[in-house]
Image (cartoon, rainbow, N blue to C red; front, side, top):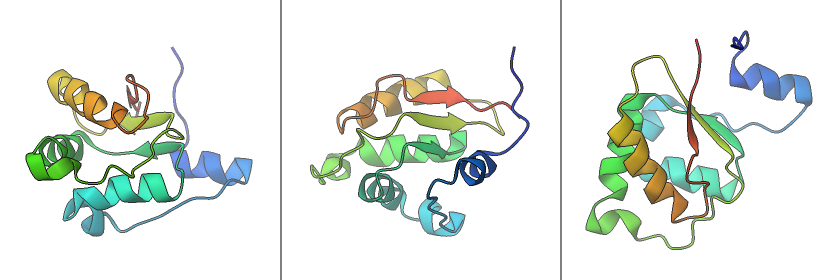
Length: 113
């Protein structure tokens, strides 16, 4: 078993790669903006807690939720989630929704704390 000793943003600093930081309140109140930022900035690694994954799955799963066919999540390789228990049904549903925009079907992974 491997143990994560540093947060995802510290790994990016070490590697010298670009990062996108957004206040959590801006994303929680507008889940679509999370997907928009992932697509616009060609994000490859990100993090979201389970409560937000559930909210995002609900929003994207509605009729109005999938309006933006222009999203491209093909660069996204890792969506870590932790800090609270992850609901398997939520992860499966959201993974299916995100895969419609090019994300791998197994995109959500446990982030060890």
